[in-house]
Length: 221
Figure 1 (cartoon, rainbow, N blue to C red):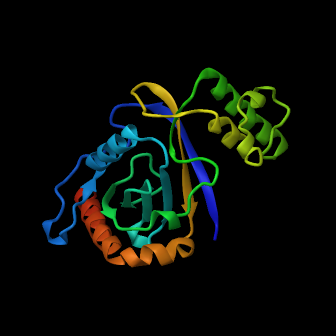
Figure 2 (cartoon, helix red, strand yellow; figure 1 turned 45 degrees about the horizontal axis):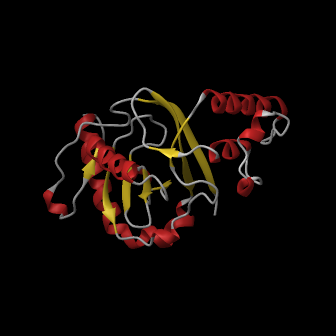
């Protein structure tokens, strides 16, 4: 099973990743939240308790259905459908799912969330990126800044993880700089036994996502 992690570094602004919501289709008999409403709900949940979150993304069963994601804590998990993972503002919608959160692939080093970046952390990250581009390696042990951002329990991890592990999880505020992640990317095969039990929900989310795409792009499908 191939698993990798990604981080997003950006300035948080009001409405980040928010999309205009539409009414869920009542025939599904499932409470769907889409775009702005979904982002707002998850951000409010996260802000109340930032610890213990995970965010895992995987290919949908059908190529035309885009990507699936599981985000939440061990107490509440949401199943999300996205049209793309290559867009800063993907079309997305989701519903609360009955899933054993202990089986979801997640980072063993850091939990998902927002970590505020101060100037020293940003400089350490930039130096690490520069070192990697020059040496082609993932480690940069010679920078004195790394010693300030090293947590003993993640010494075996990459430099970026060591830097971020020293930063507290926080609730993001507008016009501040944050690192968001890790977002775990895994293969469909690696998570199939878990998500196949939710195939009916995935089909409903995919059908609604297709409707949203047709509404936004008249030439779609």
